Length: 418
Image 1: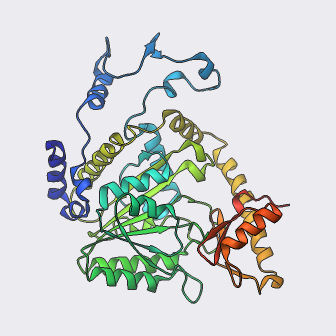
Image 2 (image 1 turned 90 degrees about the vertical axis):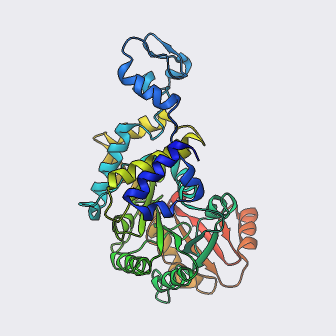
Image 3 (image 1 turned 180 degrees about the vertical axis):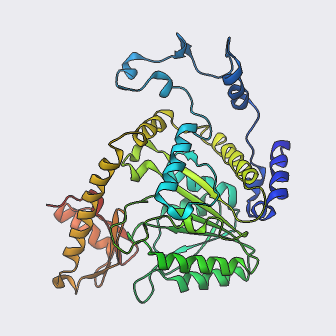
């Protein structure tokens, strides 16, 4: 094992041995090299005469650029777009995003959690969490209504096994008892479990209310009390798009953070959907531990291991995208512009619900409860989902997604109200 990785592991074992136990073998071996990047960072602050450390070209004291590209970047200086961004992301953006997390998640106040690290959107964040915490054969517990890419990220790439439970209970609310049953069954055979929860849910568009959040945390804490280590991942890709009055207006991460010494909470969020910049690929990964150790040391170790995974995969995330997201967060019109787009999406969701509640469709389908996000799902009563998808695509020019034999996902986010 590289001495730098061993040094990080020793620090982690000293401050929080439980978090060390949660690491995958790959996670234990990860480190951020003291090579070009760290030497360049040091030179950036001290090399006042010449800085000949990093592999970019400069001209006239700024990053070299092609005018035919720069002319399209009105209001953006060359140094805000063209150089490499730091491995963990632009420091100003990380701080600004943490401020946003605190503002939008009141339950985080008074809790400790790491400074967010920039990822190349949430898919990359999920992959990083997998690199850190998932070994071949590890079990991931999640609802049966899930984003299909989870299987590629954690199953195909890392060899994880999936244990699912029905998302909805008999009352069409979150199935806390189903979660509890699977966790307790898994706890009898495993000392570590990865729990993956996604609200607003893709594909159903369902989000929990505060009562459901409390129940979930109660289950997690009970299982942890049995000596089971849990990495609880909150996939918050569609955070903030909550349309129902009863929906919890914050992330489950705000409840799972510091919940128990055997629970490591991981938050994955980003500008992708929240700011409608899907192609920018700007996301964040944030950690919150329990336990009595020095949390600053724990977060520093996890941060360096995450940076090592980034360095060894994509090197760093796009600088220009980070600059644009940072500028948007500082804009005086940002909140109002977001509110306007939120109202557009909410109106579409309510219109879809109005149509679905028409009794003439009772023989054809039922719809799964939805109150947030981009999507909703139908469960067909008498027609195969894939057969229906092909039929309406070819005959009517209407595109939807078939999910299994019975379910159809409809993205009202891209369907305008006529």
